Image (cartoon, rainbow, N blue to C red):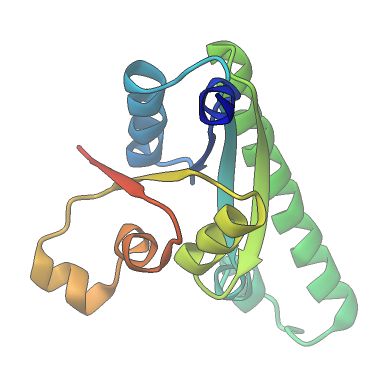
Amino acid sequence: MAEEASKDSGKTVVIAIDGSEYAKKAFDWYKTNIHKDTDKVVLVHAVEMHEILNSQQWYATPYSFDKDTLFAILEKEKEKVTAKLEEFAQLLREAKINGTVKSVHSASPGEGICKVAKEVNADLVITGTRGLGSVRRTLLGSVSDYILHHAHVPVIVCRH
């Protein structure tokens, strides 16, 4: 009986989302194929720290190590992330899905997504993929590949 009650309370699903068409398709796949009203969805946007420091703004500035310039660049990046998070929250509202949006700063997106999955006690992680061949994936690495091998729960990789 307790097992039945826990099934009725829904599952916590982490969906990796970065604004790409592949992430959107993964979200759509979840919505169409396995979503239940009792589920709680956590859309996770992983922000790579090196991405911010490698931004064009950073290198276009003659005073790259100036504290005020650094803070201004970081503030602009924060605004971009906030806008993306609002866009992702809108996806949940439009689909009438119970959930939250979370950003995580990490050295690698896969690592950040796995960390959040553990923090929210996820039952499942869903991610999209660009469908790189195995050689390119091995050489370049892949967020979905990292999640697949490091997540503590089942992972669905939506390839489109």
